[in-house]
Image (cartoon, rainbow, N blue to C red):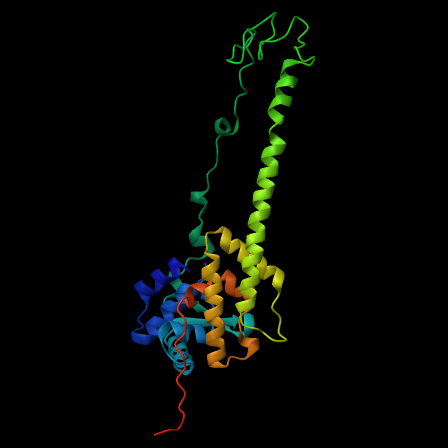
Length: 273
């Protein structure tokens, strides 16, 4: 979701009613370039309109200069750029970054003086007393060999590293456990996500997008619930499998947030009076 695109719509758009709702929905899906490509069914669900009504409003917004089609995006969906009739208000790279904003350090700032050399006085730390000029562990003699038969610094490093394998092993097990949970949740997500039949729906990028969303704090159950409700909507509308969003795109756009509410059942006319 682009807050800048939403601000642009609120401040400069002249659209009203359902057209404004469609424009705001586009702004919710816009990237940093104010471009968005949500599907018509997605916009229809947001605005509580039919697909035909959304298409009509998109043409009106385009005619009014509120949006501009720029190219054909994923799944054959038109990519729109939000202009709100005032494209000059959009920042260009030259406007967004000027030479005056560049920080140029002075030679004094670039050069960092070296640390003062160590004092000839032996270091007096809290790990022991100084014996025969050997500091640190407080164990040794004039030749710098500790009680363990190795220099004090080396003996201390070996003792400190003794707990590292344990910590590394615990972290590795924790990471493996988290990965297993993500894999299990992703498998359930795939079971509920609508099929694209013979059309491409790569698994590995979708798994990476799923894991990234979970690491950002998304609830796996909410993602799975969104996939299940999205599948219900696809089935109700009889959407062609080639127009079903690829799972990786659906996850990267965080579209599960749009499908937390289960679609209302479709009432069919049975012809009875």
